[in-house]
Amino acid sequence: GLGLLGMLRDNLTWPFEVDNDTNLGALGQAWRGDGRGAHSFVLLSLGTGIGGAVVVDGHLIRGRHNAAGEVGYFPVPGTLPARSSGFEQVASGPALRARAAELTGSGATTALRGRDYGVADIFAAAQEGDPVGGQVVGELIARTAAAITGVTALIDPERIIIDGSIGRALQPWLEDLRGVVADGVFRPPDIVISGLGRAATVLGAIARALAIDAALASPVAPSAATGASKP
Image (cartoon, rainbow, N blue to C red; front, side):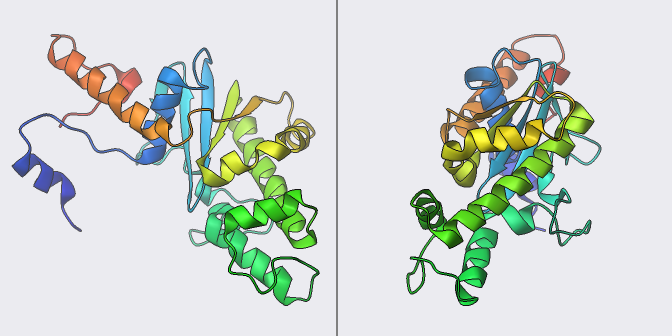
């Protein structure tokens, strides 16, 4: 209810767009990242929240309500198909910490007990063979694979790009994730961890700014491939 677009229109003389970070991240991947050369890819951003974006034949797919790719709502094992539940409720940063606390409270042997730990500590514990860390990461792999399997069955993308702080932390288990997905789909996509890291969203914003500038200098209408909208 803030009316952000109206505030910006009232105070900015330059044309502008407002978009979410994952959509811009996908544009950054297509321009300078792991999406280059792929006819279709899906960006999955796993972090404090869960986001996603779909690019097909150079087009960012937005959907009727600009909500295409919102995999946080995707039903996976351990969730229910409801607005308040889904992939985000079991794979986001707060969800992983809550799961680790639940296992620790049940008496499981873990080096995490008695520590003020974050998500990075859970991944570090898993790499060191900690039972709680290993179970949390194992469940995350299974649920991420389920989400990728569903996306693959629907879209059949050439590539899945995993980003976000949690997504990038899955690098040591990437082959495990690929194996689980391969067992559940007709033909598995290429699954990679983003090489752009935090820069993807900024690069996507720069790409859109350049496209807007080019459109202003041209009599041709903005390309639907860039997802341009009137300011």
